[in-house]
Image 1 (cartoon, rainbow, N blue to C red):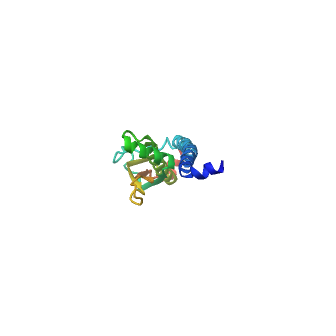
Image 2 (image 1 turned 60 degrees about the vertical axis):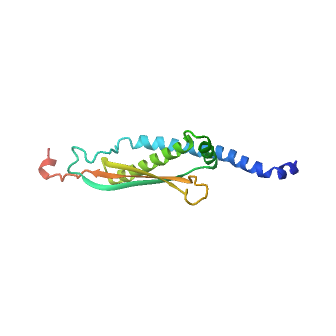
Image 3 (image 1 turned 120 degrees about the vertical axis):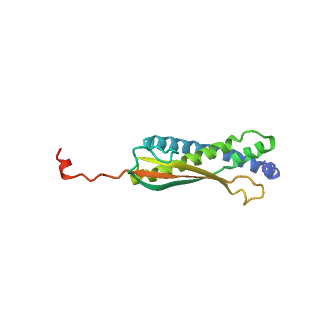
Length: 167
């Protein structure tokens, strides 16, 4: 039996890594999606729009906010992407990677704006890039980075005069 494992180690090791990557990578991805969903519900009241300005917020103070996230690809998804590159078609394993990075970056930007007391984020933009593809010779994606940035509009609190407070 031991002779069998030694003889086929070159084949068994990649198969074990694929199975391990599939199981652990799937668990971590599902946990991250659950976390994203819960946090998105919490920040639903803080809109992030692509408009340059919002009516009614002309007197608000504008502050730059940004969020960044780097999500790494697991071994199993990399293997699936290599197969898709050979045969062609949609690379859904990388689509979920980009989706997770984009959503995480937006949430981090909203968290920063919320700490500042912002009502809305205007002029929001998202940039994505692949990290690690130039570092290895196979030119496959190692990680995906997403950066979300915009202008958080923090309302200026009006000074309450003595006369107005007596109402």
